Image (cartoon, rainbow, N blue to C red; front, side, top):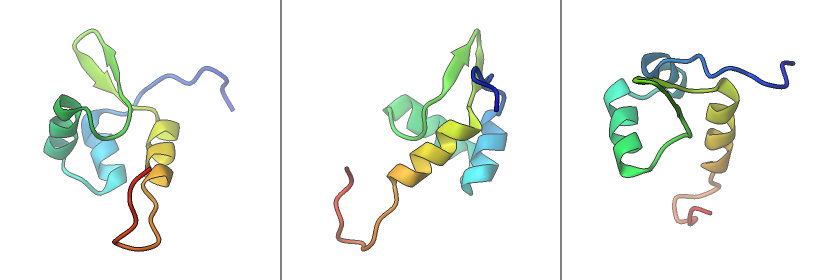
Length: 68
């Protein structure tokens, strides 16, 4: 495993992995929600590991459970 992974997923690729639309990820970036992302010049990129960690943090056992 690379100790210094390079963020290489585009918004479209990240959205596909999360089952979301790219527009949803764009909106969440503006609102400060969603998975962490990197801004490299004008390009936005995501790390696969960040997406997995973000998803794990959203795991719930019931619909009434509060987010952490």
